[in-house]
Length: 488
Image (cartoon, rainbow, N blue to C red; front, top):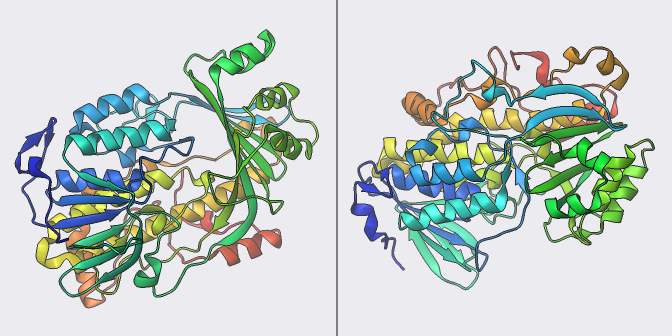
């Protein structure tokens, strides 16, 4: 099969209300129809590239529960009017707060930072709430791809990545060979691209922690909770995003109009797996929580209402940041979790995959068909330090939550500094790529220094490893991440 596209609708200047920039002639093949892969496909189409997607599953993957998307991922959402309307209709607003495991509120954070009075964000004209349901988002992205004629080929898993001077090459598990000008590996932490891109298989390391993730439909809560408990948990009409903290564990409790979702981060007992298919009973959640006496009994009862085998026990594995997302020839490039996986405490995994898409699509357009290898490497220059810093921030946030002095916090709630920070949610990756592309290209070609401006003001980036961070923690020392820069 050659690299030609079947997207007949792409000759139009406007389609489905989306203005497409002039065609670049670049043929892009994406492995992975997840959030990062499909969002990049849409942005690539808008910027004039021809796009196809391969997805190993036979149909759209419905696994997963909830997550957040920050405004920095949505700077072009307004340019997809039907998708924007669906995003705003199906997202969940929530007020944010931190609670003691005993059941009383410690800190009332209120609105998301970017939605507070007088604050503007980069996703112009888009209301960006706290909570997204994964199934709703992937259906939204798939529907927009279909309306634009972007081909998604389900049931095709990529087994091998390769390239020559002119083309990128993939081979599927069934032996089919496909070609493109550039191949984007957006197929997650299990990607087969590492062998070609980095020359080695990157093995994850145990963090010592796991998460129990569960969802309870609102009809079950309405039937199973007492009136007192309903008033305690279900009285806020806008929904709530609560984080309960205890010694060396915390629980995210997300209360929406349709469901409760919870994520229990706890010490790993060795039984968890890095898979959405490892289901356990609600009793496993209660067993973990009762290992720390004193939990609010109403919270325990509410979580006990989880449907049988409706909990996923997910091992949190660390992966060291690695700066080589692009292959030596520059025609195979990793995106999202394939390049940089995140811990849940970062609140940034989906956002950074989408920022990747904005940046990479822009670099390819600016460089054009003849400069793909240098464009992919320039994209990495623009992105790596920011993403690596946010990965480390996920570790630091987990450390902060698990070693809080609750008594001190109750006396002085203003001392609590856990935020995303405007440097995180206020970044415009599309504009940044446009502004800094030529400097990044010069750095790639000539080996000159490149200083990023998408980090906290005054922060001095330093390379880090999981091993060093965990060694500090075992020695009772805090991360040095916060030592320089204006974070919040």
